[in-house]
Image 1 (cartoon, rainbow, N blue to C red):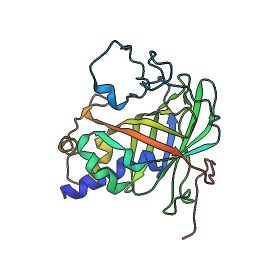
Image 2: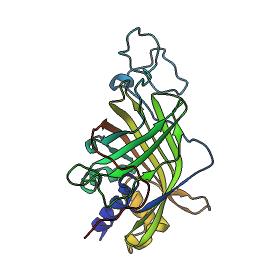
Image 3: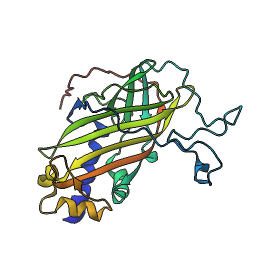
Image 4: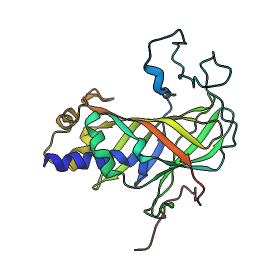
Amino acid sequence: MRAFSLVALSSLMVSPLVGCGFGLTSALDGKEHGPAVQDEESAAPDDGTSDDGTPDGDTSDEGGGEDTLPATSADLDDTLYAIDRASMRVTEPPGLDALFGEVLDRDVFVYVERASASTIELAVALAGTDGQQDPCEAVRAFPAGDWSANPVFDVGPGQLTTSFGGQSATFRSLVLSGVFDESGAAWRDGTLAAELDTRELAAALGDIDGCELVADLGGECVACSDGEEACFALRIEGIVADRVETSFDASPDARSCAD
């Protein structure tokens, strides 16, 4: 029973990425945080570079000296990216990481509808087994995000309400962030963070206590907005996505497909 519940919980957590039957509403309380952008050598002792909380820069930049990232000069409007599933690491709760790869077995598309000097508008959709957009899935749009720190993007926070096993669960305070490369050919250092309420998972988990399961996975329940200690954090890091040239229908209308 416990093993089944672990897989059930991991399946539910994949939902904000694959766009299975959820609706999106924008939160109005502002941004939460941007991505942690690090090079492989960032674990070295501090050598005097800035510690003001801005993303670490690419130390290979010509001219050196400044801890900055090259801005994306490419036009990102109407571009499509496929997430590299192998790049995704569930860091919170950490025990979910071992199950994650078995659940997400198809590509996730991230579509840039438009990018202005200060904002960026993204949507997500699930690919079919053939690597093309799945015609049975709806395209789900994020709230307009922050693009003023080009090449760093930060969309959300928002809420994703998804149906799982006939029950609904809401991914609250959802934020997606990352860093585009200069040519717009890819983005990296992606992070997805959200909060879930274990009480909404009760029907799917059966007789397993939600917070006990979260503890088994190495996480911890904290107070929800109503004060009940029943919520926990989901965090996925290291997301990498490459630009792909394939047809994509960005219509937000619900899709249907023949049996």
